[in-house]
Length: 113
Length: 119
Image (tube, rainbow over all chains, first blue to last red; front, side, top):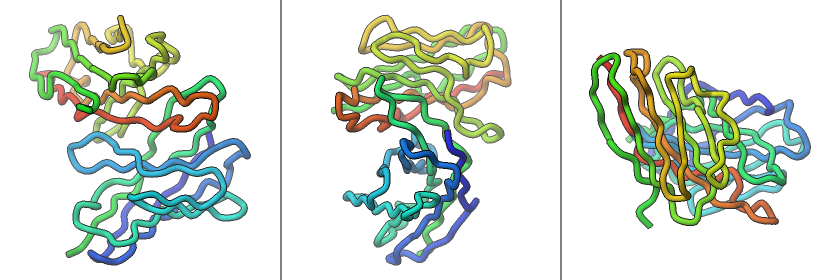
């Protein structure tokens, strides 16, 4: 799996957009970028994933650079409930189905009132 | 949908005792994962199953750990004998069959976790 690099921690003001970067310079052509988050004392929660096009869902937007070496997760209007550890994971989609996901240390995002 | 159900939520036991953690995946999901989380080592994958068959158990720390999935709706993670260093939060997660188009692959739904303390 391609290695990912994320900042250890970030702060964001409530109501503002939170932009979480992820570097994955060794990503290969068939690897997707996944984002999960873990709110304190809960299990991780899937947010979004993409291959090369930008993606948006009800939770967030994912912007992947044209060379695919980095991506940014955007929470458009951060709330206090978005305070969590955010994990960026790069993983291939196998023809045989689900594969194991390896979680790194992630970015601890704190939303400031 | 009740989500992934784990039990017990909390367990305190003494060193040397057997511990059994249980997981009920989401109905229709065909992949099941066991993770362990500690402050020191973060979130580690222990083992995962596809269609009730163990696919990769390379993360299982040692022979004291074993996992089974006798049917599509139930899995257990057993530690025998338990040691203080096994203290952690153990998460179970499940994922649906991605299908021919691989849609939804690697999208895991996690349970609330089982917090284990071994004294």
